Amino acid sequence: MGRSEDGCIRVGVVGLGRLWESRHKPALARLRDRYEVVSVYDQVGRRAEIEARQLGCVAAYGLVELLEMKRVDAVLLLAPQWFGLHALELCVGAGKAIYLAFPWMADLGEVERLAVKVEESGVPFMAEMPRRFYPVTLRLRELLATRLGEPRLIVGQVRLHGFDRYGEPGPSRQLAPGSLLVDPGCNLIDWCRFMVGEEPTEVWGEASELMPTGERDWGPDCQQVFLRFTGGKVAALLMMRHHAQAWGEAGRFLPQPGIQVYAERGAAWLEMPDRIQWSDATGVHEERLPMEPSVGERLAVQFARLVRGEASLAPTMRDVVSVCRLVDRLRGEGRSGNGRV
Picture 1 (cartoon, rainbow, N blue to C red):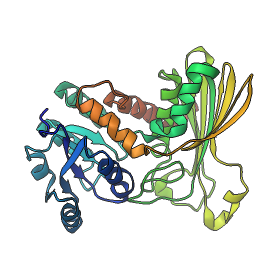
Picture 2 (picture 1 turned 180 degrees about the vertical axis):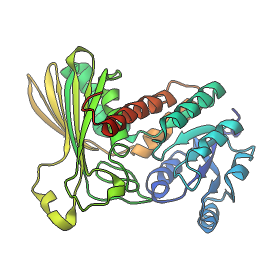
Picture 3 (picture 1 turned 90 degrees about the vertical axis):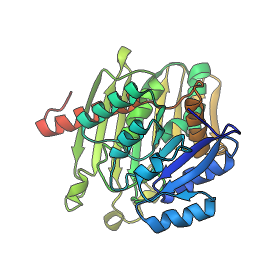
Picture 4 (picture 1 turned 45 degrees about the horizontal axis):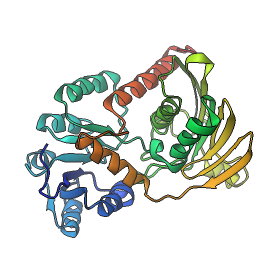
């Protein structure tokens, strides 16, 4: 794959919103030695024009126009726009490296079909699974490898306090209102797979309505997911929406959402993205981890390594398919009324 003379990866950006503004734009600005933004596209053409003027690059007025630019080595798909995952297929056809940031859960058959195209094409592909690169995740992996031993039980709780259509996904917000199984479910399920280091052998769940008058199109506002791995290892996740109008400031006194991890030689408590408490035979330890480099920079570094053919921790298309299959099974049990898959 061609790159500029100074070795920078030349990227085209699709979808200019607050996810771009808060995570990816600052990251690429700090990694000027690795990246050059050569074109931007947004379904709101004026937004692309303004951004292109600020960056000193070209505004594209269509996805095909951007993909036909020979100077573009890789495409950052940061928002679904009006064409959704079809953009991924067009990138494959154009032979461009792909960074997929928006929620990728769709019809399983469609995801599997696209996965075949990606793998057959050989184009570099990275899915944005940011929780893998939170400071507490990286620190916990170090501790499991050196002090705590193999994880045996993961218990996690997430309360969503709202959504932001163009916002940065985080531990307590959605990118857009939608199913809890998709967001944050997909990322949390992947996080458990990542921490345990294997695929679950069983998955099952329960859904309920905490607020019967809530928005029905979003699905249940409380979702539990259970994952069983080999050797009796288990993960239990609870995801729910916080209804501020009905519950007021209850979030101020309710237990802090977070993740407990019980391992062979100790335990840990994580508050995403940067606080961890852990204990072993030597005592209790608490760490507030630095957020520099940012999560956006960590993601961009892994993508650069992937594009250059270097060793990378980038989540793959196989990770996407694995998570989508698990979520599809959970959805299937909801349709069938079966309590376990």
